[in-house]
Image 1 (tube, rainbow, N blue to C red):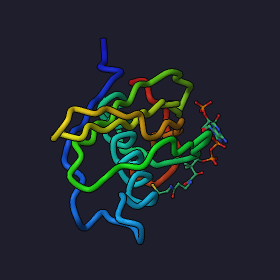
Image 2 (cartoon, protein in one colour; image 1 turned 180 degrees about the vertical axis):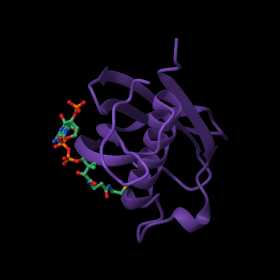
Image 3 (cartoon, helix red, strand yellow; image 1 turned 30 degrees about the vertical axis):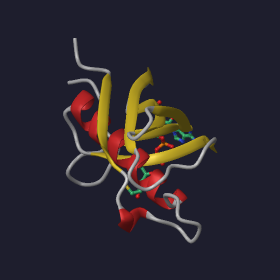
Image 4 (cartoon, helix red, strand yellow; image 1 turned 180 degrees about the horizontal axis):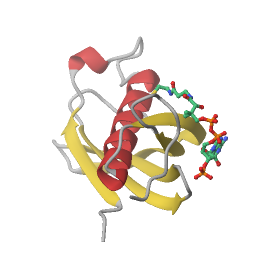
Amino acid sequence: MKNQKLKMSFLAEPVDVNYRGNVHGGKVMKWIDEIGYALAVQFSGKYCVTKFVDDIEFLKPISIGDLVKLKAEIIKTGVTSMRIKVVVSSKKLINNEKKKNCECFIVFVAIDKNGEKTTIAD
Ligand SMILES: CC(C)(COP(=O)(O)OP(=O)(O)OC[C@H]1O[C@@H](n2cnc3c(N)ncnc32)[C@H](O)[C@@H]1OP(=O)(O)O)[C@@H](O)C(=O)NCCC(=O)NCCS
């Protein structure tokens, strides 16, 4: 059975900072797009593009130096599309304080070499 989950983990770096000293929301959205892309390609074995993002909610800020974890899971598959839930959480390493920072749903569509949608099943 194909792997329907993927995790990523890394440190929030000073280059990720916004004007208040926390991680920029756009950066978090980029990470979500990246893990969604990686999972969609891993699952379908095809190049995939982002089609739709919904229900994105920023719950708590991420601080620079926090250990960031992203978890992605395919929750629905269609003919050409995959709906993926992504949860972003973080841990302050100095005191082990954990937070859920963001959650959203993102849809990827598999495309062929001409950029046309294509089936995710072989
Ligand atoms: C991806 C693309 C080829 C799809 O072509 P399309 O003819 O618009 O596709 P459709 O409207 O038939 O939708 C394709 C799939 O996405 C799903 N989908 C479309 N809109 C959706 C939405 N708002 N929510 C959830 N799923 C959606 C459809 O249900 C369909 O899934 P299925 O085949 O599994 O049933 C085309 O829209 C495209 O090239 N978009 C630009 C992608 C892009 O540039 N992304 C950003 C950079 S990666």
